[in-house]
Image (spheres, rainbow, N blue to C red):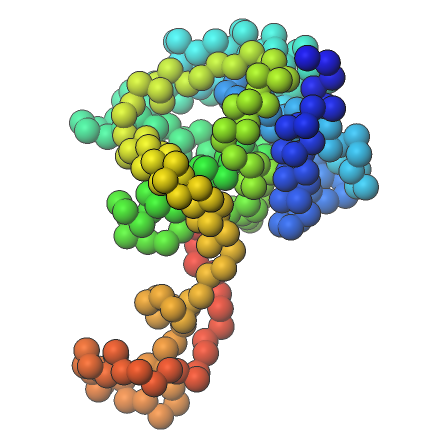
Length: 289
């Protein structure tokens, strides 16, 4: 197949990654980026692409690949460690017994993934601080972002997704998602081109949950309406607060200096055609990772 770096698809996805990093200022001069490598196709592609960018970027930054061994008895930790050792990026395998905690805390009917992901996120935050890393790179791609958008709308009743760059609530960590513009189908093909060993999460693959339902729905829509996924991604950067219903980010003229808070507003007055000219600051609500 020749040099994977010269492949047309590699160039395409690399450009997307570079654009995402630039658009959201993901990597800056002197950064030490912890690349979270699970062993799946997305994290391997991310590591490969970031290494390519590191050689060409106008800023100097370090990469440190980190695999979190969660203590799962079926996880191929030794194989992933051997694969990391074959790369040109420094790496660490960090051991945390999250599996036992999940097994103890898991409630009937609760999916393993939700609890596992929260524990893993907290561990990665602590590990990044321990290793002196300024950024944590996660392998979430375009499809993850739009699936999360629909999942939150369908099942949580809110409009939110995974931001390309996020500062943790305590300000200690900055999470970045360099694959935010990249399609999962492209990453699947790229993983075959770079030929890294891919180890899927057995626990996640055996769960037929809400995310897989949304993934199937999106696949059907994309077949019927090509470009719908890209349109959904674009919608995340074209938010119109005044066209929604969240009074915490848009006042709708419901209260001002002369308004009486004791006077209730009827349904008819809420639906009046006169647009509000009073705007509140366009602050961004909190978004979960």
